[in-house]
Image (cartoon, rainbow, N blue to C red; front, top):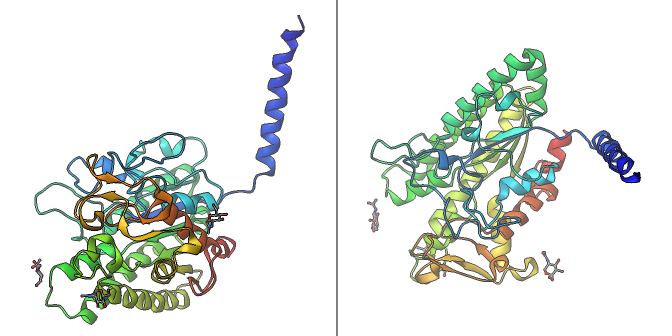
Length: 363
Ligand SMILES: *[C@@H]1O[C@H](CO)[C@@H](O)[C@H](O)[C@H]1NC(C)=O
Ligand SMILES: *[C@@H]1O[C@H](CO)[C@@H](O)[C@H](O)[C@H]1NC(C)=O
Ligand SMILES: *[C@@H]1O[C@H](CO)[C@@H](O)[C@H](O)[C@H]1NC(C)=O
């Protein structure tokens, strides 16, 4: 007989505990993520003709709880996930393309991930030569953000939407693919001219987001992409491609000036700029304190530096994956992504400025 009472009692205690937990929980800032494969968590799975995808093994072999190739270019989670974790979430919010028309109205809406592997600041970056849609360029990611704004406005009104978006964190990680494309096309456009037009494109994207109501920008610049395994194999010594790294440094410096200008010209524009170049170089030059033992070769791939093939089901797979900086020929390992997110969140001005991502949330 006693058991009759036990279950309801446990249930009501459980519900009381849940509501206490809910009461104690701080309100999490909504998170919107835009960018390329460094932040893509499965967008390109929804583009049937896309070749820029990772929804097959060995990708996802260390995905939490059970191996699963989600479309992340990683052995597990990526930087978008680890950043979201710092703000109280389990992982990145879902891809925009996975949402149904009614998703926004369900439960508590807490953000969206728009990032698409292979995409760039320029619309042409990452597009294939045939008619198949290969990537979602940043321009289109911002149009999707705009459609989300419209849905939110229909749902809660203009004033509440404005407030919601002004508290939201907008993370953007993009630029590498534009630099790769420029470098490998042997373009006759001088470097200065190319970078100016690239930063002009970035400026327009940021202004568009600002005009839609975005205010808090967490921006991640370009890593030393000349040190990716895919680029090292173009150097006879296996060293980094210096010219490509120089482009990344110049890109960061111009982006720094641009953001500084926008924050003075546009009221309420707040930002934090992560210096991926410095962060990553610091690890490459001194890997052991970070527990990395391999910072040149890819964990998953084939041939020289495991860099002569993509990470396919037949590729070689390393076993000590947390000791590798690179998962595949282009992308950081889960361990490296976790370290990057910690640095963006807590880092000092040598890595993230003028404030870090934790301070941006409070700003
Ligand atoms: C660029 O130049 C390099 C070396 O001269 C060459 O191997 C490569 O095929 C060229 N790329 C294109 C897209 O023309
Ligand atoms: C190749 O790497 C070496 C270091 O090992 C570096 O000195 C050299 O400049 C690199 N070459 C190119 C083309 O970037
Ligand atoms: C490196 O590994 C050691 C031993 O597993 C651990 O105590 C330490 O926290 C790790 N360091 C970093 C930076 O992850």
